[in-house]
Amino acid sequence: MRLAMTATWEAAEFARLVRAQLPGAYRLAGFLLGDAAEAEDAIQDAMEKAWLAWPKLRDPDRFGAWFDRIIANVCHDRLRSRGKHRVLQLDETIAGHSPGDPFRDALARDELGRLIRNLPPDQQIVVGLRFWRDMPLDQIADRLGLPLGTVKSRLHYAMRSLRQQLDRQAGEVRR
Image 1 (tube, one colour):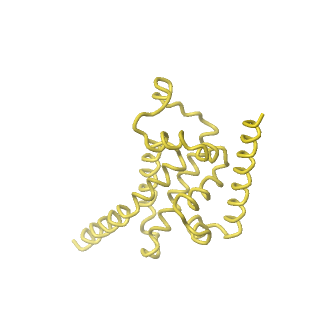
Image 2 (cartoon, helix red, strand yellow):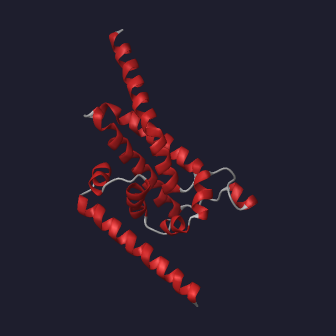
């Protein structure tokens, strides 16, 4: 009986902690993936991975950072697989966009958002955490399990690439 009570408490505690993280995790996944349905799938995958790894979490006070790392890894895997498998949304072929998808609609109107999609997945994630979640670089490094220098480097190269893309576009407009 005691084991069942402990398992029930663990499940309730996990659900409470995940529930607190969901809004921010969903916004981050939506920004990185650019699609509400794919963001929902990524969150579902991340929750499953987190639940399976839950017994290994040493410090429950660091649940947010731990869960963000899982979200970032799931999104990274999805971004990398896009290059291998082109996903064609049914509504893209019919109407040209996804009605009611807040991420796709917002990013389609956002020129910088479109340029960010051209970055490698590692850079997209760092840019998303830095500017979308407004995280300091040391916190990004902690959440991704990377050295601070790696995060700084990825952000530097991402910003340089975005600047170059914007300069190219400005040159094309002037012609």
